[in-house]
Length: 417
Image 1 (cartoon, rainbow, N blue to C red):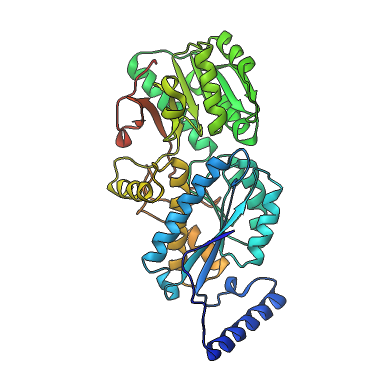
Image 2: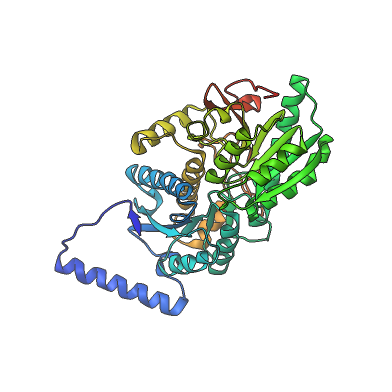
């Protein structure tokens, strides 16, 4: 399935038909001699194809659909503003790739995008899928823009074609723990123990390993490690163990539906803690969190990526998203939206539709016109955004608000809960 940023007329003249046929023959020759579609060798193009791989069906389809919306809005905005000016106004064309939530599917989707001549690919939401997709991108020399995927390994393998804008696992974990320590100190509350509830995928496991590594820096002990399957319909056994551990903090990493299910179970089983704190939680800072979790959401925190709420540019983007999709812009959509603009900026600077040239331009990115809670977007030698910053959110007055760090805060934190 594809969504085109601009259409083309159905009827063309005989002269134009043979002209285009000649161009197609030249492109075919380029494929046979070079192994890549002509567009990636610097040929002129009316459209620039980009692909994305997200879970559009299956148990994560809700999340994947939001990522697609964020990309689609960015593509349409860029096209309506005149396209890629350095390429004569070439328009972006977004090709859909459904991962189905399965890492192995990323291989076939990357093969398809390579054959289609995509200049870049975006994805994949799940770290396990992203690890596979970025490996394929490196093989094909296709710039890969990570939308959402937190595992450190994504940018930790020496790849040259992978670029991630969001905080990686280490950045997100260390910053969240630092924020939580600052909030506790400000309130005069001590923290000694943490019970960690997390999904048993690469996502949750990688974050737990980092919390285990960095919690001792604050004098905190991991009292309980409690993994669960995100597909499980009942997590009462796991939550009962959390309850009886009696830790000061319950930390939780998970996807949207399973996180709502776990939080409701915590409410039903009357789990008591000084704070329930998400880490990269797909639900706890989502726009629909309060509506889904009800009173159980009150004062729940989440260390996660976020748009800068105090930036007027953010306000404009959020309003445009709501006008188009009739819903508030979730953070997943933000981190799918922003990389499209970074790619377009790199393409303008590259000045040609060539994968290698775009990769080199991305490596030199210094992007300031963004909506994220950080300084300029700058990629290190590993492709990780060096200035990426998480924020600590909390549900206050039935709304998810940024409470830390101070430059991006909308409200003061309530702690303990």
